[in-house]
Amino acid sequence: MFQKILIANRGEIALRIIRACKELGIKTVAVYSEVDEQSLHVQLADGAICIGPADSSESYLKSDRIISAAEIADVDAIHPGYGFLAEKPEFAEQCESCNIEFIGPSSATIRIMGDKAIGRDTVRKARVPIMPGSDGPIEDVNEALATAKKIGFPVIIKAVAGGGGKGMRQAHNAVAFAKEFHSARLEAEKAFGNGSVYIEKYLENPRHIEFQILADRNGKIIHLGERDCSVQRRHQKIVEEAPSPFLNHDLRKRMGRAAIRAATACAYENAGTVEFLVDKNGDFYFIEMNTRIQVEHTVTEEVTGIDLIKEQIRIAAGEKLNMDQKDVKILRHAVECRICAEDPARNFAPCPGEISLYYPPGGHGVRVDSHVYGGYVIPPNYDSMISKLITHGRTRNLALDRMGRALSEYLIRGIKTNIPFNLAVINDPVFRQGGATTGYVEDFFNRTPKDLFSHKQEEE
Image (cartoon, rainbow, N blue to C red; front, side, top):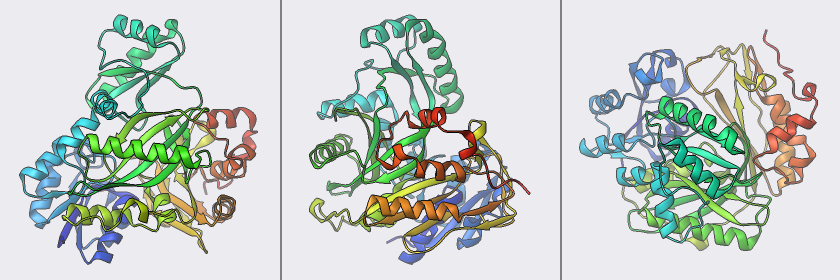
């Protein structure tokens, strides 16, 4: 087992990794930007090293500085968390060349699945259903338009190196296509340094279902069930739950097997997520594989009782999976709400600033993963998520009732958050009845008076 791990991330995921390491008896080293010096992950790690200014391009995305910090601290391994360098094959290669264990899949696997076009082709050969689309990246707008017409509108234009909803545009007809094509390319170039895009058929209001994978170095691959992530804004998830209220036993079984075939096809090891879109008829299509731990891994932990961060560390240390597929049991229902410093009434605009009062909810069946506290200043430089609120219960209704109660007692003053919006969603009849699709948020805004989810925790 490792003696010391460097955490190449910030915020709640860095703190989550620190906690897992403490329970395993592993020392931790945090890295931080100048603006993150007071973050909890810096205070609770066994050591901490500043790696640069607030801008992530000068700190958390500087792989050479993180490798230097790892060598100075003499660590055995690096955990990348999610975001930043977690899915950069070049960073995994640097770790490999420096004889530092990268807690995640190999650089070769990250490269395969990081290129969405190559990833699609890889899983297609493994008999995993894929969405009708272009055979690979398309650079020319006229060729792209011809492909879109062949597929049939509506289509979605997606960045080859994409993630987090960036570099994605929908086109519902030929007239709008050229504008959306160029917009997607420009956004992809700015976000990922790669403007290549490909075209896929766009499903109207599908479910977004993902399967959690664990794979060791001996070729054993299992899945830990699914998560329903259909409640999204701008292609980014807001509410996630497990198991999905939409899947039946047969569909769950078929999708789980497809997820394992996808992981096998790219020689996967460690924790990963295979993502699908599912239409109203139960037909499902692979969209991508995330070669890292997910933000919403918490709901899988709560329904299975398996600590995914510890499993990641054990696998990276060379240990075998100590469970088989038949050992995985879904014990309860869990739901997660992402708590963000943003204003839903202003198109979810970020709202950084100082938290004057912070009081998280508690009680049976409630979990809060967060790195903030009263007096903490949320910087404007990073993602607006400040915590994850997770509840569980024997039934979906009980988990949702607990979430409603927890949201109502979650006190954050000094900034605006999406807590009132999340509470309105949890109480919404369409959501409560399991009817949410990827078009849910837009529909919710269209039929819900804004004062129902306007911010009740005004800045002081």
